[in-house]
Amino acid sequence: MIPAFLALNVLDTPILFFNEHDQLTWANDAAHATFSELKMGQVWNTMPFPDGYLYQLHAFSHEFTVGTLVECIRNEDISIRSENHVLQARNRELERLLDAASDELFVTDGDGRILLVNQSTESFYEMKLEDIIGRTVFELEEQRVFYPSVTAMVLRERRRQTILQKTRDGRNLAVTGTPVVNDNGDIVRVISTAIDLHQLAFFQPEMRQNGNPYDFGEAPAEAPFDTKIIAESQPMRDLQRRINRLASFDAAVLLMGETGVGKNVLANHIHKISRRSSEPFVEINCATIPDALFESELFGYERGAFTGSNRSGKPGKVEVAHGGTLFLDEIGEIPLHMQSKLLDLVQNHTFTRVGSVHSKTVDVRIIAATNRDLREMVEKGLFRADLYYRLDVIKLHVPPLRERLADIPALSMAILSDLAKRHRQPPKTLHPSTVSVLQSYPWPGNIRELHNVLEQVVVWQDAQIILPIHLPEHVQHHSQQPSMDIHHPGGDDDIRPLEGGLSELLNRYERQVLQHALARWGTTYAIAEQLKVSQPTVSRKLKKHGLI
Ligand SMILES: Nc1ncnc2c1ncn2[C@@H]1O[C@H](COP(=O)(O)OP(=O)(O)OP(=O)(O)O)[C@@H](O)[C@H]1O
Image 1 (tube, helix red, strand yellow):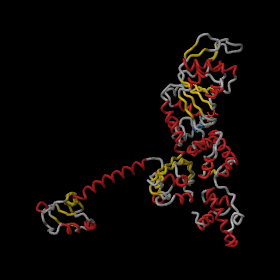
Image 2 (cartoon, protein in one colour):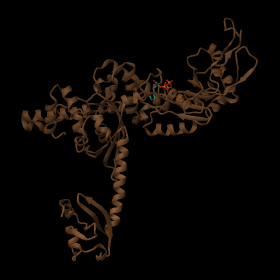
Image 3 (cartoon, protein in one colour):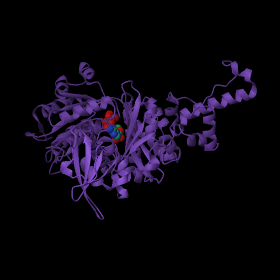
Image 4 (cartoon, rainbow, N blue to C red):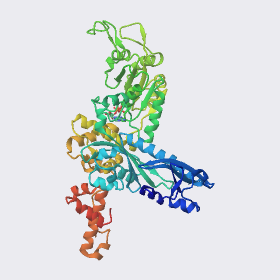
């Protein structure tokens, strides 16, 4: 018989071969074992095919051999086979979908060992898939295939993380890692996705339209991330949900929150997602307009309304905002005498230009913002109660940054990429330990302060990866991170080391130093840099002390 057929002997499934005259000419070992009385030459329709099988026929033609292969599948195997087929088809479909994605997808187990990656990963890290699967993220991080590892960070922090990551060939990736836990709460998988920021820059026009936070194009000075709100934390997600819901309504909105939390950015965002988005968004900062000019700034003036005024008159901000949104920032600072006029506008959508006797109607949506307690101002007689209740239809409290720690990595990442663009430098990356330091600082100035701190780092520090020591001192020192002030072994609080002599003392001291260094700087490369020894030395000593 032809040798190719012999391979069929390894199968458990009985296989019979009938030639072009329908005569049995070959059977595999499983067929001989299953059907005891097989007679070669027997014609197909005289064969006693037993019950309990499904006979599947395959036309066969190879060189001079033509005929039919009969596969005898036991009935009980059929359902398993069909389930397998379905599963295999699903797997293939899933693999095709994953490979079709241009973003990287990376799955590890709870020890950081890589289980699955999609095709894009090859080009992201310039490595063959087979060289990636089975390795740990710690090894790849150490070899600087990418740095830092988001998976390592997720395993350490036990929650979703977003960071800027650098690859060996200098790419900048925005990476998000998400933990998957089992019923006991153990992390069993970490799923990471990465986007190449350069590719995003390429798609910049579409991103602008669709509101992408990683926009690399020219951005307005004060609101770089104006179209998408970073909302990784629960309080911000809740706020975002409410904002999305109210966007389609025209009701007045009052944004309350500490200074620098992003009220301005949110007001802009509400406008952008509302039906008024193609109309003007006009902002008035009530704290910066002198009292005397308030009315004319807001409502405009008629021709010859006052000496030196424009002869043809001038429309105020309210008129300019017609059809769009009027944003009254720092509404708590509005002078009392203006509040009644504002009430007309909020209540009836009417206003009167300075020097005119005719009121005009305007179609604007009003968003107001303040960091003051308006209710208390009402009680003290500093703010009109009727205006307060008119503005207070939909009140949104914007949480301070210290209550939305989960936003800090993504915010920092977005701010760093924006700063890089402005200062024409490659974006810097935050080391995981720096993220922890940033998350333990109370941020009295909120996002504005975070922005300032990161800008100082970008301007003053050359390092590409921002370590805690690169942060301004007051931020570093406030942190709860372990410090490098090592307890002196053998001090008053430690009497045991004397038993082991000097070498034991030094050994313990070395372990303490390395333990703190690991907690603070996270990788052997960073520790080596800080402790001024080689990276292999750090690696060896960490192993010796059982720290890695
Ligand atoms: N979601 C965000 N993503 C990125 N940057 C943000 C975000 N929210 C605010 N910022 C930045 O933080 C800074 C302060 O934001 P914003 O001016 O909106 O705060 P605010 O609450 O209006 O402050 P104030 O009460 O002092 O006017 C700005 O530089 C802004 O670009």
